[in-house]
Image (tube, rainbow over all chains, first blue to last red; front, side, top):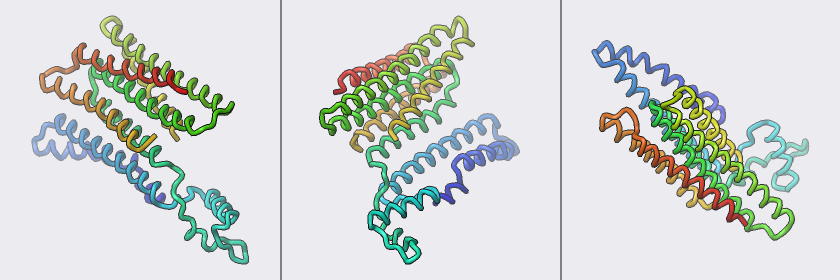
Length: 240
Length: 62
């Protein structure tokens, strides 16, 4: 399956689809269709199709991860997995020491938990939806509203992850390790909160500047969106 | 986190994005090229509320 994914990489398909758009526009123009209107519509449908494909890919990956044995991604990982199975007595080796029944016995589920996969799907779906919506935001005020929506989405993601961390803490016995973990979580999420506040303030300032210095306002808005995207990526890694 | 929590989160995120999409569609259908200041203020208020909620949850960690 990995080979198939390599061959049909989503980015390649999207690039091919986008490259086809000018051709379709050209053909349509031969039949008297308004080129601009047609191109806009086709681009919109390409983006929608890409978003649906991305959402389906996440759902499919989650399904495979939950109900299928986890395939090692590299030769080294495969070798280490076989060695571990031999150590655990879950596999049979021949006289040369080669595992001969490891694959049949390797029936453990993936390492990801269902809730994490759901969280990842939520974040990925939200990011995909934002990625699809944002390019269509043309005016400054529209983009400011989009940036505020991103602040809300990142804050909601952080809240969900914080909830996961609280449950992890609840399962720990009172100890120094627990206290240290609590402090680390508090510090990390306080940083996220402060960065979000910084981004939100930057959007506020950008809006107040738009009538005075539009270029500066644009720059501040772009900076805020960059902070928010970095935070989103950070939370995705934290969730993993 | 339970799966139901994650689904709720997903719906919350999509709700925010969908609200933005609807607001923009409404503006376009009314012949406006952009959202009004009041509409953008609404999104700003939501962002402030979401971040405030995060701070409250951080403070209630135990």
